[in-house]
Amino acid sequence: MTTTEFSPTLTAEEQELLPSDDDVRHYAEHGWYLSKKLLTDDEVDALVAATDRYYAGDRDRLLPVRPPKLAYWDPSKGDVQRHNDYVHHEHDAIGAILRKPLIGAVAARLARAEEIRVFQSTLIWKPPISGEPSNIVPWHFDKHYWASSSSEKMLTAFIPFHDCGEEMGTITMVDGSHRWKEIGADDTVVRHFADRDRDQLEEMLAENAAHNGASIRKIPMVIPRGHMSFHHCRTYHGSGANVSGRPRRAISLHLQDGDNAWREYPLSDGTLAGYNHDTLVRRTHDGRPDYADPEYCPVIWRHRAPQGG
Ligand SMILES: O=C(O)CCC(=O)C(=O)O
Ligand SMILES: [Fe+2]
Image 1: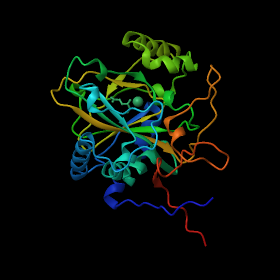
Image 2: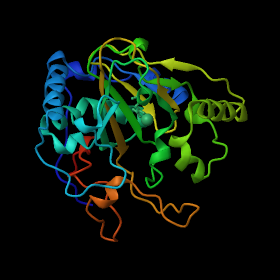
Image 3: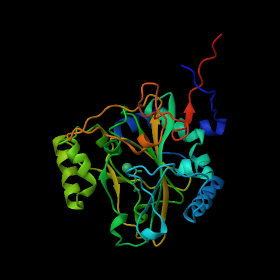
C-alpha cells in the first residue's frame, strides 16, 4: 500500500500531555478520559474567533451536495441548540486546529491504534436559556449513528472553548457503559432513538444497565479551558440544561482509527445503513464509500513507520 508521506511529531512538552499507561487502562475500563491541556490559550482564542466568523457566514468551501442527515444550523433556525457538521472541511482556520497532531496522538493511545483520521466534526452552541428543550442531549452512544463503519474503536473528543462545568450542561458519561451488551439492539431502536422522550430514554438506559447487572453512574465532565474529554463509541452520554447565563460553545470531534472502513450493514427494512459521507467521499477501487478520503477524513496522526533499509 502506498500512503502519502505524513509523519507528524510531538514536541517534548507535548509528549508530557499524552495519557499514561494508567490513563489508557482507565479509558478501557470506564469508556471516557479527561485530557490534560491539549490546546494552548492562543489556539482556543483562535477557535472562538474562527467560529464567530463561521456563524457570521464565513466559509472557505461548501459541501458540493447536502447529505440527507446533515446538521446545519443557520440564523433562520433561531435560538435553539446549534449543530453544524463538517466544520473541519468548510472552514480552514477551524480545521487547522482540529487537525493538531497531539489530539490524534492522544486518541491513538486511547484507542490503541496506529493511525487516527477525522471522521466528523460538529460545531455546537448551547444557548443560555435554561428551559430550551433542544439543549437537552438525550442518552445515546455514537456507534448508533455509525453502523456503516466497521470499527469498534472509534471515539469522540468533546472540546469546549471555555471552562465547562455542570451549570453549562456539560457532556456527561455513563461510566463503563461501553462494555454493556445492548438489549433490543435492533435497528428500529437505533432509528427511533432520537424520537423518544426523555423518560423513555431514561428507562431504556435503566433497562440496559439492569440487563448488564450494572448500576448507572453518571459522570459530568468538568473540563477546564484547553482540555477535552474523550469517549468510546459505545459509551452512553448526554447532557442537560445550560443554566450558566453564557452560551456553551464546543466542537465534537469524531475520530476513526486507520482500519475503519465502510461496511455493508443491512437494516431490517432491507436498506443498508449509511452515513452522510456516502454522498460526498470518493469511492474505493471496489466501489465503496472511502472513509479515508483525505478531503473529508484527513489523517491527523500516524505512528512513524520504522525506517526500512
Ligand atoms: O453536546 C453534548 O453535550 C454531547 C455531544 C455528543 O453527543 C458527542 O460529543 O458525541
Ligand atoms: Fe454523542
